[in-house]
Image (cartoon, one colour):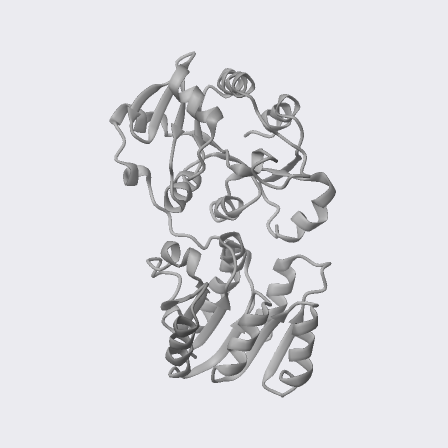
Length: 341
């Protein structure tokens, strides 16, 4: 049965959905699963052939680009269309496209309900409404159940493992990465770079250096620090003052015969591979949280306390999951160290 999945939002939202897509693959087979996702994350997923048959990019702008996509998809014969994001544009696209049955995750928004009243009252439309209370996992499980698809916890293991050969590391560095903890610093750690009214973590150069030393003293393991594409002055200063340069993207800091390795300017594939090879992941909740779930890695997830219920709705898997609340880094580092394995 050819099935088209529509999910045109952010990277983390796709990772949340992938376990349920894996369930669909087990039922209908990969060759029958196509995906429409947003243009901004298309490049990251287009080569993951083990997840989908065909991936289509939904253009952010451009009427004619969107029209060409519509014409291309209209030429396909789908048995099922599934909308996972509840977005108006995705629902409208599903209405225009041809399929025998349509399964739609629908938000409690005005336009959504206008669409529901006008278009979605036919027998071939099956809806799951986002009640804002249950986790997305429960709601998505309900959605795939409408296709007689059962979810299995093993479906959280949705990513294919890749080893560190990808980085072409010097042998001595590679040996230090047999067992390591990864801490991902991005804009979410600094409220001035992220959401202004969030509790600021804002580690200073001295605070972060002390954390590295405390971590090494406690675990006697390697610490990997990543920043993605974000240019942080904190990390730049540490790399310049305290580290040895290995190459353009890798810096090394030594303490008590152990190392902290700074991977700079990493793309999402780099971060994915480092995450799946780590023992612990320390991050502010985002895509890497869900990558870690795919490999049962111990997650220390840093969240805003007043939004705890909102964060909980995005986390369906609780095994090896530890949440800590945002606070000044001098205090937060103790919570992080206490939850390491």
